[in-house]
Length: 288
Image (tube, rainbow, N blue to C red; front, side, top):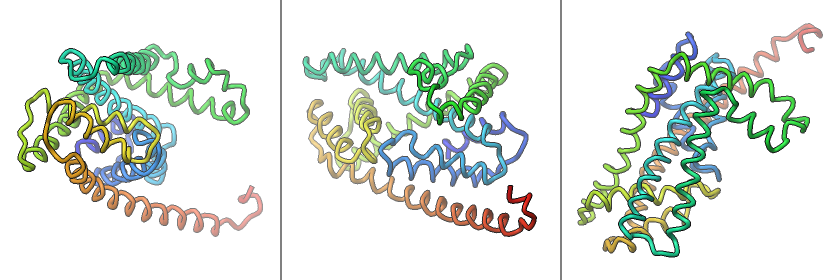
């Protein structure tokens, strides 16, 4: 629900068109479901959110900007929590010496990505276009075709950070609460499995395994379970990691089913609308 609230606030600041909040809630569930089932667990469902907003009569530029800004906040808050967890793990000697350097590299990557995303957005350097130009991808015909659209989206994002910075700051506490809910969830599961985690243990268990979602494996299958098993073992916590993760997977399954049901229903409706619109075209010039 809080994910939908954050997105709704962003969208409301970008356009005067009103979108039903319940619709946004189910659009967000569809994003979650598709992201979970694709190799890109963090961003795989974003295009579906854009399509669903277009179906709600929101322009592609505004829809894409709202989704990118929302995803930026989501990933930023997750990066910050994971960075803090990595730092705690290094300082507390939780990680083996041979893994500490890898952890430091990951921590550095997190900081660089986070800094570049917001610096490039605020300074109008272009989050996407700058990377495209650096890699010389703008020479490709397909990319060149979409460059104008990409620049429009980046412009709208920059305007949001410049003109609605108070709204942006107000969204940070929401993002923190959302990420904190992972801690509450993990504490509850462990507690009812007979283990009371300390705050440090809880913080590490609730954040480090989620790095697996950044690896191109649908839902982090295997990696997520292995990550929990490894961190439980490193912390000396005696708990069945597979059962622990299975309980989380059951929760995920409920959200996935609701999200896929909404996406399929909306998809059928979009196809029907497109077919009806095409059927109404009678004149040859209309077909052009």
